[in-house]
Length: 295
Image (cartoon, rainbow, N blue to C red; front, side):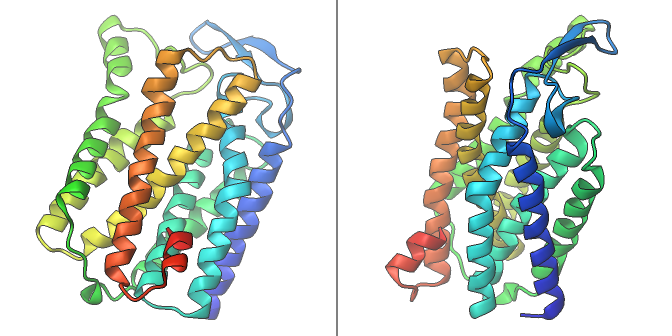
């Protein structure tokens, strides 16, 4: 493994730990206050820690994400990093690239979604390192050696995931366009970064990936690895986000839990299965225990 890549991965891991730990330590739901937003509506603000100037609705979601990053994703990143350092091959590089893509998604959410705070430069640093790290690892993968024959199940998964991520957020947006009102959860923000990432990137990328797989284009396999890992992490993330929202006093209704948290959790479960199948086909000689850990 090249020294430059070692340094980049170490910097990313350090940034992930510092940023997520600070978010988790900001967990205090007793300092809220209200302000009038740019649309003249009263918004309840969080009032504590790094998310002091974020809304009381959004901050627990950020903290739930940070909790997952610190206690689940960072250990996964470390395991994948050392696995690749120990014996680098196409499979380990693909796995490292997939965790880089998840870290990039996290960095983008922070950089564009969190209210400006003292960690703004750290967010940008994480965003830059993960973005260029993705390019660095991707160019090292010998795509011509990748061999994966997608079954019907993964094709259906990509279609449903792509369409669902695009359609899921559309009703609320279309309603505001028709009624000429603001998004009900826009609060103190100018846009919803989740809508931008899911509708503008992740959803369409699922359909692009399917198209590439059908054409036997090896780039489709590389994209698939990142999409599956992202879906797995988002599924876990929905659990921690929901827990912190409930701890904050947010009343989560059963229909909301089923349609939002439940659907993403189900999506993550299917992604975990297809992720295991992907690496099983790419590395058929891998030991069963190792396959379970790496998925």
